[in-house]
Length: 226
Ligand SMILES: Nc1ncnc2c1ncn2[C@@H]1O[C@H](COP(=O)(O)OP(=O)(O)O)[C@@H](O)[C@H]1O
Ligand SMILES: Nc1ccn([C@@H]2O[C@H](COP(=O)(O)OP(=O)(O)O)[C@@H](O)[C@H]2O)c(=O)n1
Image (tube, rainbow, N blue to C red):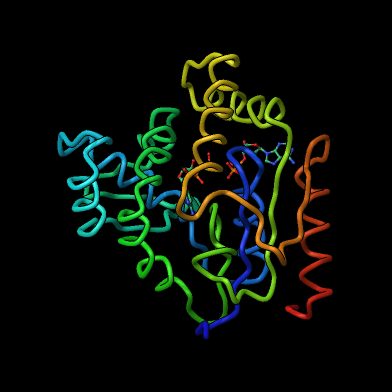
């Protein structure tokens, strides 16, 4: 049994999970779990410690002892630190996403991060953003969303996001990267990217953020969580 109610938001890269989860947590006054950040920090810690993403035993050891902190800045932005060193920007790069996806395919790494994710579940409630929040980490969550959109639209969104941060990226490469990541996340043996049986699936292709958020809030209200 979970200590507090959980709303899970799963889906592929660029579907809008982070955006919608932030809005939902702020509106409800609930805690937020960005589970992807834990996988991203694990990948980044490997780079810092000189460990190859393919060395499963060494990556697992890093995940088991991951010294990570999340702190809310005055701007509302969440600062992420590994061993006290700010890695907030480094983990959000294209390479950071690739590393996260590689280390996330290692079953022992997923196991090592499981309890840490469940610890985020505290009163009054938790919005959990990821790939397996509704299927593995919080299977008893009363409301589960699975957000998706076409790969082209997701790549376009990510392109605009990275360009606005000053990263130089190519749209074609981002589309390839998104397809590669989708394939790896969906085909892995442990906790693959699939909607939970009881998830509400929302395809946000051609829908703006506000439109998607309105639909999400409507479902949350219908489920009696407001
Ligand atoms: N429905 C939408 N329409 C247009 N842009 C969106 C939509 N949802 C999210 N975005 C934008 O797409 C980018 C990726 O969204 P994000 O929430 O980080 O996705 P995810 O967490 O699923 O990878 C962000 O810049 C965000 O502002
Ligand atoms: N619960 C989760 C969250 C992320 N991940 C992995 O971590 C990578 C980065 O996750 P993210 O949510 O930060 O990435 P985006 O969806 O924002 O691109 C994903 O491609 C997944 O491989 C996962 O396996 N399980």
